[in-house]
Amino acid sequence: MNLKVLCLALILSEATCRTGFEITVPRDTVTGFYSEDLILPCTFPVDSSWDLRSTVITWQRGLDVIHSFYYNQDQLERQNQHYVNRTSLFSQEIAQGNASLKLDKVTLHDAGVYTCSVSTNTGSQKKSFGVKIAAFYSEPRLHFSLLTDGVNLLVTSDGGYPSPTLQWLMENSDITNQTQTHLMQDTHTGLYVVSSLINLTEVTNSSLTFILHNKPLGQDIRREIQLFSNKSEKQEESANRYHGLFILISVILLLLLIVMSALFVFITRRRKEQTKLNDFEEVEQAEIQVPNGKTTCL
Image (cartoon, rainbow, N blue to C red; front, side, top):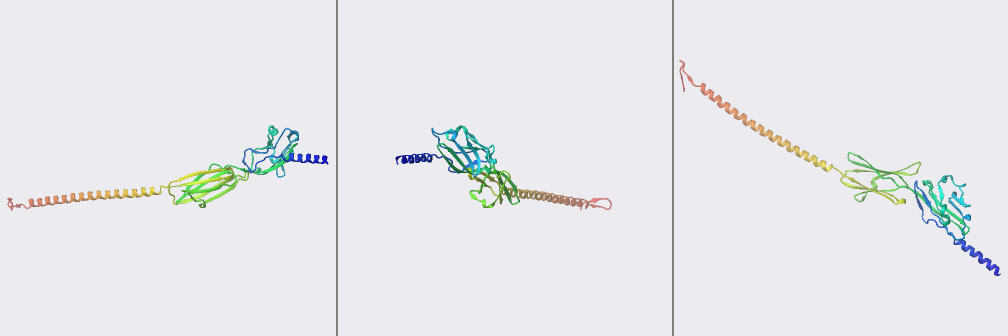
């Protein structure tokens, strides 16, 4: 009877030891940057009784084997082709309980649920966590075209993932519903090209704000666009031009009037002088000439 109790105690003790073996992986989804290396964290407990030769580390995504380690070396015969030459363990740190996996140059196809399995002479366990891939959007490019009654503004950005949230503000008022947004996805990389068009009529001096938000990466692109309209200046310039032209015409007319008046006065005086001259000549001719050749004045 005592022997049975002792055996049962030993069994419970062993189960307790094995139950105390717990690996650690991220609780939240891990985000990888497109085309960069990604480390998938996984650690396990080690103690003085731990033996490397009995340690088996396996990484999987679903049923696909990504990386295997046992017999003190990598075992890649069953590795999925998508991960060939792209995975590695930190072999020098396995003795410290590091079973993390390094995944090189991640793509959008690497997103999914990954499972880390560790089995040693002190216990075994496996845990899973999610991985998503994201990419930064490029610096927005602004294109504009003038219209007869306004302007078209087109903002484009590419190379990002996932699809972003766009917002337009004018003087702190949301005008996003006045825009046309288009998303295109690269057939090879799966990354997005986003373009947003806004048409503005009766443009006045104002400030526009373009905002692109890429939530997984916490990327916020905020760009200010200043609009200046010279419509009022042109109107004022036109009014000034017409005013100046009116003044010029008025001055010319006044000068013509003065010239014509002076010319009229001059002609009138000349006529008077000519009339006097004619009268004088007539008086001279009116001197009486005597038929016998003598002259006398009347």
